[in-house]
Image 1 (cartoon, helix red, strand yellow):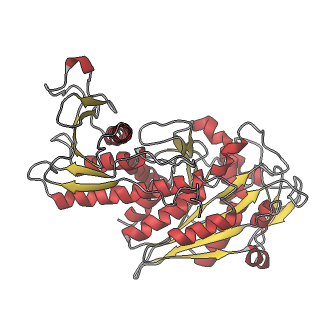
Image 2 (cartoon, helix red, strand yellow):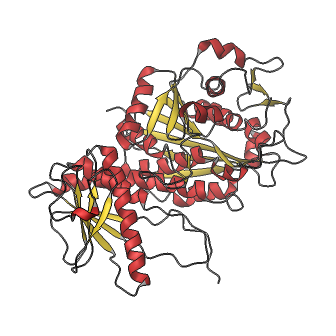
Image 3 (cartoon, one colour):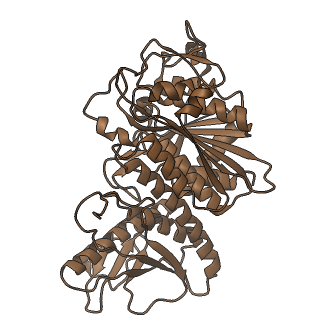
Length: 488
């Protein structure tokens, strides 16, 4: 049988272990802060210890590296971990090509001042910086398999290992979200996304239920059905559930799952349409977060919903001017079929709130180009109905290395959401990111709610820090950290 060109999902990631002693014959890297360059580093290397600088030291006893970590902030440790693993992978592949013995394990000594959180940040960078998604006929390059972090003398190995283990779990959530975002849309139909969610839900305590188009029609999920109506691949609603015993709090996560977006009859320009395979990045973040949440076992009940559909062009496509009735009865006047994300999210929000009555609701979506203009490509937009909720999400992002900027839910634009011939209008006039959030707020029933717009940081054109080109998995780590810290 011919080998499938599709990479495995989840991708295989580098293993990270923590130890208090070095492994014989395994090559070693020394991490140093800026300005603290060891005497053994030759002057001609011009190494200063700046963030992400990696140099291979000359010598006949096997490879040795020196790695810069700049000022030693957490983000610098993440960047250093990513830069080092990329260099180690490259060395291993070149060594294999030349007939040598590539190292499969590399070990790293961080500065003596580095604590457990710094080791965890370095591990995050290493796991994600070495991430790779490729579909080719060529053999995969030789890569390092294990990263061994050496703790300072006298340190409690278990304490460091616990921090690193959690960091690696969060990194695996980001990697899984990248996997599903990067999968091309000739493979990634709504049904594929749903079946993948079922398959990766291999953690005790996590269950998945997939709702098909017949179920959606019977219960009048008008938004999902309208958006998916133009495609030969019917829509799905993916419901993930984590219900620990004794949980008193319940968080609802909702992620946009548009597996490809042509814009529908309001057709997108051709130039950037190929990137629309990543338009389900919010849904990917929710699926990946739910898997890691179940693995970390917080005492919080969590439900994840991913409305999945393809927004295509055909005789059965929904039209500008249509009025769509959502789950629960509220109606929307359609003005632009390329604003499809809010249509499917509205159904999922209304259903999730009515069915599960959560304490807090968070949705995440590549929703508006306006947020890319406002915040660029590395910062997510955060809207929230409560200051405390906004601060918890921002703090969760800071903890795991994802940057959020709070945006206003400006009440002066709220009236613009009202429609002429329906309850609400899909594309109100005014600032696009804000009015889109105000539209979604109409379906949250007054509950504490946050909307995360990741249109900018969900994709990257090139590598930086622990990010690689393609889907970034942005948002998954924030969701996991928010849930695991909820109620503390």
